[in-house]
Image (cartoon, rainbow, N blue to C red):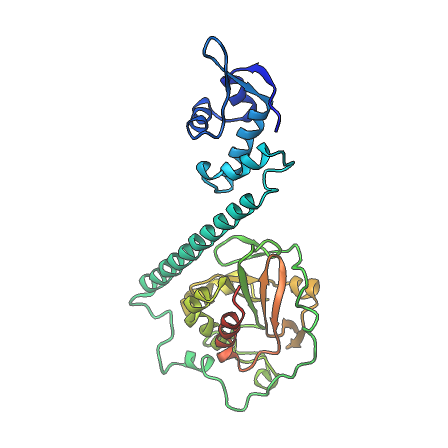
Amino acid sequence: MSREVNGMKIGELAHRADVTTKAVRYYESLGLVTPERLANGYRDYAEDDVRLVREIKALHRLGIPVERTRPFLECLAAGSLHADDCPASLATYREAIDELTERIEALNARRSTLITNLHVAAHRGSGVVPPEGTAGEDYLTLPADLPVPGDDGAAAHLPGTAMPPLALPNTAGRAVPLDALGPRRTVIYVYPLTGRPGTDLPEGWNSIPGARGCTPETCGFRDHFQDLLEAGAGRVYGLSSQDADYQTEVVERLGLPFDMLSDPALTLADALGLPTFEADGARLFRRLTLVVRDGTVEHAFYPVFPPDEHARQVLDWLRDNPL
């Protein structure tokens, strides 16, 4: 990288690079920026220094410590068009990604513990979760003669398909962009509907292949949540066509350590071509699970059976297919 001295002072450099003069001096102390010295002792900066300082700032905003930006600056100094054209720069990227991944995993584990503590504290001494032996137990126990759903090929097109630019509301009150879930694997288990104690299920529910078992499936993901994170899942979501208020009640009643998504209009089914069925005049999702990574469906579980063992099936897949 050529250097042309032009009489630029530190204040002008800092202004053009949108940093403080203190930051520039710190970069100099690390040997990342080396201005010329005039006869009167003043620093003299060049256009190349503006580019270096901007590069340091951009990398630092990505989470790369200032002192570890040297490979990128040396890449520019060697004449490369881009600061990350060199192998050493790529190696630094990888190190930063690995460190960030460890931090995310640690934060997810802490978040899981906090959510668990929250639900224990919030429901301590209450009757929100149906005690053993009540009518609520019916939703947790599957009949032995449930019909097994067959594979009709309705999900065969999903692996490799890009997630649509949809944002669905979650039970934390935020919109989750499905096409921007990040590089970590996100597990989204999709199901028809969860029943509530004292609320009737659609007529003939048990006779519809793949319909019964949403609550036991959700409890399975709850019980295996920490295992799923340790096996490489960055996030877990349950998704149905039930509204956000209904989903929030499910999170509270079952003590879930993860958020649920709501899609009353079945926009995801229409966008991805997911299988659906009708019951009591309502259109519902068929049960399936998506493993999403980098905005793309990596794997699809379909059909899902038995639902109360499905979280274990997903866990086994994650362990058999590490990143």
